[in-house]
Length: 357
Image 1: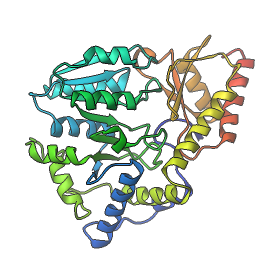
Image 2 (image 1 turned 135 degrees about the horizontal axis):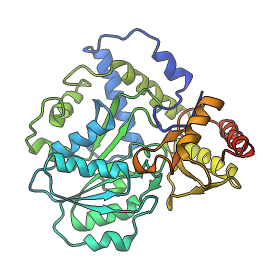
Image 3 (image 1 turned 90 degrees about the vertical axis):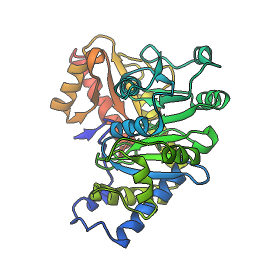
Image 4 (image 1 turned 30 degrees about the vertical axis):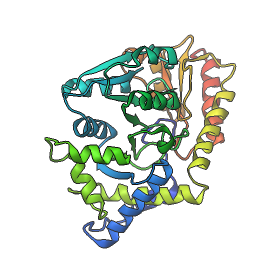
């Protein structure tokens, strides 16, 4: 199978080889050294500022989203949520669950957030802003520089879910004055799912340490304290953390973060050029590098997903809910090549010849 989903994605042979090894005991100096090295690389690649920190959560990235809501905000806050799809809605849902006051900026599917829309909320009593930088359900990349300027002007605590955009689109945490960045192991890091990473600015570390959180497992104060010595409060996904270490070094060896962003961008550009002339509509006004959402003009999107899997040995991403039959997504992350793009495009062309596209 060729995997064009957006997670889990195809891993390199070097990363895969670690998954075949016996797991070591982790309460050791050797494992602590690996964890500290992982933090060093993550801080470097996110371009975090002075005294920034990172922790490694054994959960999906939704767990980290919830941990941030629980540890960084209280009922005295009032948050602004950028909501352009399933993952923006997830932030809104988490605010509801934890009774954090919020206002949702609802956007049409595929539409970018425009400055005039954002500044309707300027000068109001908000204390934080939550955004999924790449709204993965629709492939929209939000203007984080615009959002960062807005947050700085309004003194907002700025939370960036970069789960699909980290290492796929340019992101400079210090320059943007972002307070939190979240990502996951199964995206451009191209490791198995199970680890989510939270990066904290110095201000975010201070905020977490000042607030009281009623949680044991999702207590970020405990995570930060244990990570000082390269450990976690509870048993982590040891094997994935070892694979992440190999992958971070692989990125460094291949030219670093900017080179990795460039590679993903070229993979996306190649695919988008090759599908010109096929009966698809690109719905994203501001396309992210990690994924291309496609609306088939004369076929059912979910049926195409199934045919590609069953007849051509190709995985692409379906959408859920009301977008299931309207939209599917093609990922550009993981160990994919331009030749893989050509294989997928040939499958599309064949479907068209058969009258199925």
